[in-house]
Image (cartoon, helix red, strand yellow):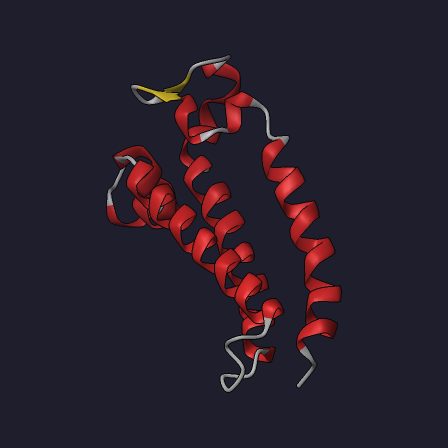
Length: 125
């Protein structure tokens, strides 16, 4: 098992790149861009994306959680006073809060995206 410092040296640059990517997403790819079943901007051009926005953001949070897990596995339970451990746990709590906020924002349209591939096998056209 890697040390916490070694894990952070690997995970932190990835985490920063992931955060930068997420913050640079165009407004048409935000969860708030869905309005009554279509995207606000260019609904006809990006109509198929409305079903995948929830998946895109779910993937973002899944990767974020996975990165935290890599660090948390390396933290020793016996040393909760370690500043690196405290900072890592605080960051993980912020991510957990973000994930909870994300799930509160999900709409029926987003939920359909998670089961989209199965919809057409269950519901005949």
